[in-house]
Amino acid sequence: MSSGSAPITTLSQGGDTVTSSQEGSGSRTDVTPKWSPSWPADIHLAFNPGSNKVMLTIQIPLIRTIIQDSFEDLRATLLFENAFPDPNLTILFLRKTLVGAARSHLPDAVNIHNRLLLDDEYRDKLSHLVSDLTLKNM
Image (cartoon, rainbow, N blue to C red; front, side, top):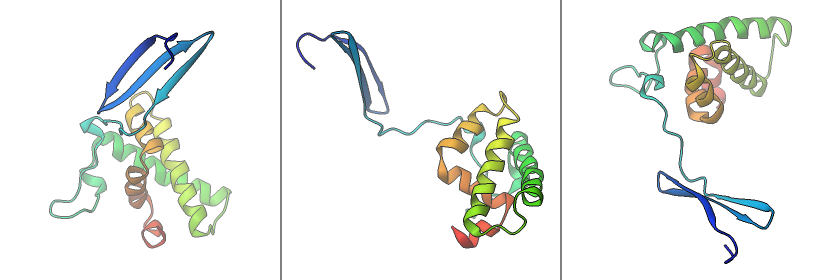
């Protein structure tokens, strides 16, 4: 920063710093995106004891509802958009239906919706519950 600018805000989250400053009439923000969001514990996925497999029946009710809605949305997508999608299109359909199902349960599912948008690993694990086609193709 130059000597003519004064820091307005400095925040620290997970060891990363965000500093905003004003220089003249413009403003500048330096962001170091090294931290990952901290998700609430209630939206973490439950795994089958002794394995790394995600099971629908042991998830919280809101996640189960979103997954079940995704079944219906995926069925409709296959009927009306493409009954025989290639593997890449299948993955896109799965992502679209998961995010859409979470969106339909806002504001209750705001954390799940945001995590589906931002966390690829989380979305992929939930995709396996909707369709096993992705297991072979990811």
